[in-house]
Amino acid sequence: DIQVTQSPSSLSASVGDRVTITCRASQNIGIYLNWYQLKPGKAPNLLISATSRLHSGLPSRFSGSGSGTDFTLTISGLQPEDFATYYCQQSYDTPLTFGGGTKVGVK
Amino acid sequence: QVQLQESGPGLVKPSETLSLTCTVSDASINTYYWAWIRQPPGKGLEWIGHMTYSGSPSYHPSLKSRVSITLDASHKQFSLKVNSVTAADTAIYYCARNRQDPDDTFDIWGQGTEVIVSS
Image (cartoon, rainbow over all chains, first blue to last red; front, side, top):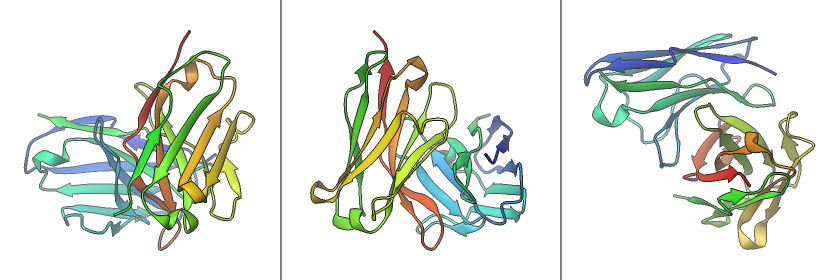
């Protein structure tokens, strides 16, 4: 299985901050890395696919970068609705695997 | 916008079978792959498996011996069964659309349903 290691597991931030979350895959996965946002009691949301493709309708403050084994999700100018837990997921091979999650909380 | 809704018992006894259904709001069930994903309490997300529109399933190796996913296009539903459950199967279970184009993603999810395994 491809292991995906996400860091940090949690962080505290303020509205307007720039937030960076990283994922590292245990092998080269090209650009086959997606990002999701989860909030309690709500359907999860796809944010970014294939490392950097912003999902339709989402604000441009979300961006993704990387390739191979190292990937980054950046939120430029954190908004109140962005406090949530974020997960990366590799789609290079089955079993599809997720990172451990990063909870973005209020500072 | 297509919507997904999970349904099924919230409490299952150990050694019994967990059964969940996901209802798709439109006819796209014939077009995409359909997946189940779970999140145990305090843990991350785990892919359980998916079913293609052509009827070919793929399962997580660690669950393959206990899991089956089936698709009922006439009712716009797909289902999950997990046999011989234990407390380790306690989780929030999500159904999701597994879109292959332009990228392989879970682009639409249900809200999730909590299943507790307990006697």
